[in-house]
Length: 131
Image 1 (tube, rainbow, N blue to C red):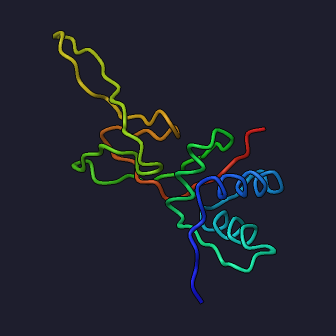
Image 2 (cartoon, rainbow, N blue to C red):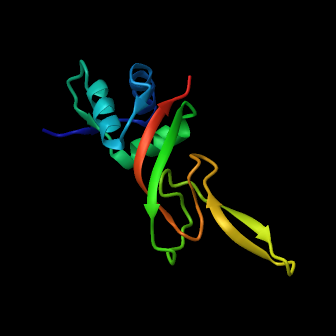
Image 3 (tube, rainbow, N blue to C red):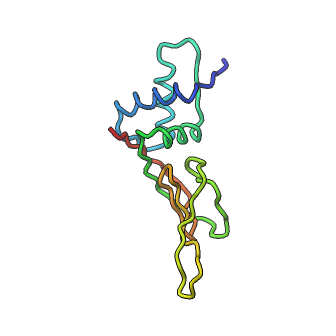
């Protein structure tokens, strides 16, 4: 049996419906399951969506707050894109005592992810419905 890929708008509508019934979803996998079940209700075609794509749509939706739990990662790894939503990261800089500028952390303007020299690797996402 083949699967169809749902459009971003379809997923966004279903995501709003799911989160209005379940205002706090404790994992990305559970959210995916709830969205796919709701998406395929009363339909002949079976739809699917990846967890990464669903997370990105949720971050850009405006009605979902993503709580990001993380662990310490490789400090040598350089990040340019947000590991949560793929948006470009903004550098937060500070002045040194000698007048120079140094990057102290990276922040995502879209989903709120941040990291410092000790790179934060996301391990768990909790999704909250903003009313």
